[in-house]
Image 1 (cartoon, rainbow, N blue to C red):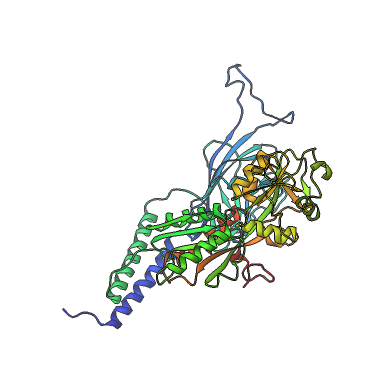
Image 2: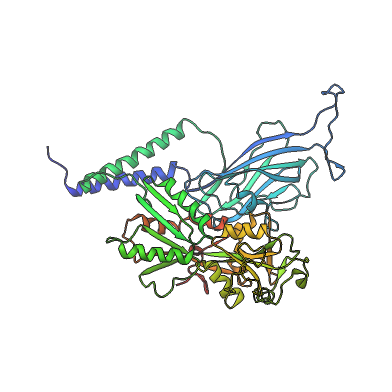
Length: 520
C-alpha cells in the first residue's frame, strides 16, 4: 500500500483543523461564561381563608408591614471554560425585579466561602435601588458559584435606571416555579464571553458537542502521523514530579491554595508549601541549588523582600504586592496610629496605651524573628529603622528575660503565632498580613496614618505598609520542569484570583503600569 505524501497529509490536516475550529467555535460553550438560575421565586405569607382561621402571618421590617412579600433565590456560577477576573466585567451584573421593590439581600451559599466577604464588603458590596439589585465585580474561577436570597415587596420601585446594564444581556426568568407575577431580568457584560440563563439542553446540542469532539480527536491522530510518534494528551501548563516552596509565612496561605489548584489540574505533580520565613527560605534554596544536579533543584523560595546580594545565583520574579498592617489586642482601645506614634512605641517613649488615648494597659510588643521578610518590610517602610533587638520577654506577659529593658518585647516565628500572641496578651501590638489579621476575631486592625490598606493599587500609594512578594529559583529552571511550569502558573487567571481573594495585588496586572512596584 502506498502511503500519502507529506503535502497530502498536511492538506488533510489543514482541512480537519479548520473543521475542528469551526465546531469548537460553533458548538462548545464560550470560554468565559457566567450562568444563572432562579431557583425559587415565591410569595411569603398565608391567606387567612386557606389557613382556616388558624393563623395569620404578617411580615414586618422596622415595624412596617411588607405587603405581598416574595422571596427569590438566585444562583450565579462560572460554567464556562476560563476563569473570570474583575477586569473582565465591562458592566457589573444587575438583577431587575419587574414591578417589585428589593427590601434586603443575603448570601446564603458561596464556593469558595470567601466570596461572601467580597459580595458583602462595606462600601463596595451588594446594593439595591428600587427594584434593581447591583452585584459587585467578584472574580470567579471555573465552577465557583454564589447564591443570593432576595426579599421583595410587590410595591413598585421608582423605575429609575436604564434597564439592561450595558445592553449586553437581558435574560428573563418569568416562568420559574413559584407561580408569582413579574419577571427577573439579569444584565451585565463580560469581555470575551457572555451571561446566560442556565438550562439543561439535550438532543442536538449533545450531538453537536460529540461532533466537535470527533474533529478534535482526528486532529490529534493526524498530528501523530505527521510527527511519527504518539500523541500526548496533557495540559501545556502541567509537569510531573515533586516541588517544595519555602519562605514567607505571610504568603503561605495563598501559595498553598495556588498549589492545590495546580495539583488538582495536573496529575503526577506534588507541591509542598513550607513557611520557615523569607530569609530562611532563600538560604535553603541557595544550599539546595549548590548541591543539585544539572537543571536546578525542585525548590522555590517565596520572599517578602529581595534576596540579599550574597545569593548571586538566585533569580527572582515579582508575583504580587502583599498588604500588611498593624494589629493590637482588642482591649487596647485604639484604632488609629501614626507612623510617628509607632516609632515612639517601638523605641520606648510610649509604654502605656493611655498615653495614646487608649486603655490603661502596658504596651507589649510582639515582634518577628530575624528571618522574617515581614519584619524587614516593617522596618523599611514604617519604622524607618531597626526594630529593637532586645528580647525582654519569653511570651510578652512581662520582662522575665530582661527586667532593665525599655520595652516589653517577645519574638515569634510566623504570622499565625504573632496573631495568636497579640490576641492572647492584653496590651499587645504587632504586624501581619491583612487578610490573616481579618480572620482573627481577637485582634483589632489599626488604621495607619488614617488609611486602610486598599487592594486597588491606585489607592495604595497613600498607605505605606506593603511589600513586593518574590518567587525565587536557583538560576533559570529547566524548561518543562515542574519548577518552571508552576512559576508560570503564578501568572494565570486562577492564581491571580486567589491573590485577590487574599487582598494581594497580582503583579501580572501591574507589570506594565507606570511607576508600578512590579516593574523590572
